[in-house]
Length: 274
Image (cartoon, rainbow, N blue to C red; front, side, top):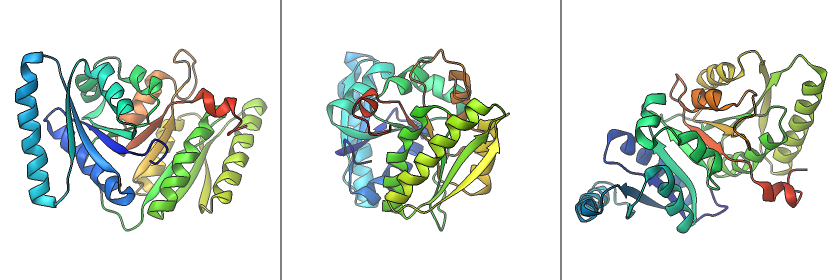
């Protein structure tokens, strides 16, 4: 969480979901020394003053209870577009939002949530439950046949280094030779990248028939704290991370937080992941 690196944004709507997101964001803030900024998007200009007052009370209470100073910002607009815009303006590293499953995601951001995540320069972390406090921090990093899937490695390596996390590099056991070859090339690259960054990992093959189910089940078995995923560059492409399956993953049944990274053309232009 250092590439843009100035803040961790929490989408705030004064609900329990917001507090779930803040709970997770504060943990990462303490680990990275980044400030946290609560961002509320008001839909009515007449509400701005009232919401600023309410949000200031939240910030003050947090300082009294935990000694943590939090920034805040209220912006008039649409959550579906302006939360991301505000995060870009303040050079945020990551955006946390809380939800109660798929329906909750739709209620919080609306039907365009997946489009927002896929288009975002800044990664999103979707959380559904309070943060579990495990003895060791554990990350699950899926790698598939798409070349873009390797773009999560930057974040995996960074979090592994600052958290001393255990990394599970998981990939589907495809049946066709073409996909087997492409996946193995990506896995080999990933292993080299992690080794070069002194990251210790284990590699695990999972069923390709229900890959997302297998990811979630494995993450639950490992008591994982975070699952990574890469979104599609084009949402119409049908593969294991199509829109519906991505929605299933980020609203997974085990309520494990998911960090969503959108593919970046500039990384490929300059050869970072070739």
